[in-house]
Image (cartoon, rainbow, N blue to C red):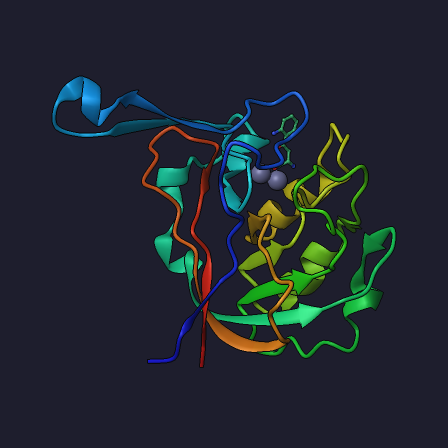
Length: 207
Ligand SMILES: Nc1ccccc1C(=O)C[C@H](N)C(=O)O
Ligand SMILES: [Zn+2]
Ligand SMILES: [Zn+2]
């Protein structure tokens, strides 16, 4: 078996979170000294911290919750591509990318340079990319960014268009050291019954 490449954002009490949202914290509810037997931790976090998937319920009250999402989406062949973009990612930016047979597309923009801080601006996905990708059979899109839309978007057009075309969203992956090419992706959400998303440990395996 080939080695795993970790493409997950490490979670510590300094991880950059969405401004105003619940900061990540890990602490001990009981220390071994207190309990006499074990350290017992707890985590408090916004679901949309670090490397995570969005469930449609995040942006649609009637949308699927995490438990309703097929785990198969998050395990399997994935193509990593590098794009250099400024304002947005559109069909034009992917015109040289071979998409035939690609079900999971992971895009490295390199636009989130300082992962210790939440970015001021990010390139967003142009909503019409959803239909274009769906044509090829893409079912999952992953980005090295905290959102697929403009950060202050209320309408979230890319989130909605992707969902309408059956494309699931993985955000905040770390692709700095990953070469373009084909890999196996494993990025399973937790079995959260009601949630609007889930943190994932995302890894790639070289084929
Ligand atoms: N956590 C937030 C707090 C306030 C407003 C938006 C967010 C988001 O998470 C949106 C982002 N597009 C996301 O899916 O991760
Ligand atoms: Zn999210
Ligand atoms: Zn999102």
